[in-house]
Length: 159
Length: 159
Length: 159
Image (cartoon, rainbow over all chains, first blue to last red; front, top):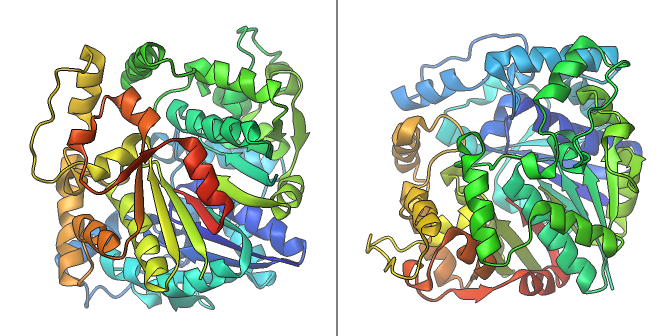
């Protein structure tokens, strides 16, 4: 058994998918896995029920960033050939036909496998994302926590 | 001697070039190197002779993805300033003047140095890429194989 | 104490910021950190005083690449929502309100903490970037130097 960490910086559907496939694969092999979500990657942790977050405490700029960010994991765009979401829909249809899990399903599996999901608090401040917007059962921390986990891991990826 | 793994997720000419320069450099220092090609990175492994793959078994969506993907390594675009391929051509001209190898030449060197090239089978299914479209002498595997190699390596990169 | 290496390939403001936050965090925990700047990441090391580099020795193509590259770290664009620089300005205003350091400040801190900054000489040749364009006190090297550092490090990231 060895530890693994993955920084999920990207908010692209395909990259987030790759991150969770690696993480779930490692957890299935009994590795302890920590995923650290920062910047655009935070969008993958947004609640899927679409409840709007209370914007009261956000500045105008934070509201703007928050509005531009995808509403939840299944609304993320592809890094290539997204075409305003059409590319993602297309890919999801092929994935279904090929029995490949969606990102929402991969996140569910990650939680069932006790993968540690950490939201980067500094990025949350910069992008104006509140805790009430993110899924339950995750942790909140900064770069020192990430580095502590990385020091104990034998595989560390930045996605 | 130590092992190295590189996941080539990106299909950008410049990023694929960086991946092979690192891989070839490590192999030249007697490291054992495994490159795992997934998603857009698979385009780098497409045959350069331009023979169209038999599309018979592909669904309509897979044919569409397949058609959008670059035809081979030298047709990949730059991650920045690509301008429909003009940026890449420009960069390749400077590379030639500065005696820097093209991606096709870097791949050739990687094969001469026995770098293990693995195509991710799950991504092949999603993007509708058949084995007959990819260069010979590569391996086919999934995330478990990647994780096995990564566990034995002291440097693991995601590009 | 352990060593860390970060390859800064990307020239996006947000990604370069993430790279320096990780690097500075590790250095603050007494790690020895090496950052290797290659391709678009080189733009982050350009001098901030805006002095134009002598273009005399550059070919026409190198001049064109050089002209397209951001003038210095604070002119880098965001990887998402950049809108011709408006997104970056917006993010920098939120960062100031939240007391988050700019990339220029992060670079200054990195230098104070003796983080080793290496510019990739091969990329400099391809993009036509001369030493006189880059900030003082950095080192110049190639992939072999990077690999030597990575072999001694327990965390190696590609950003």
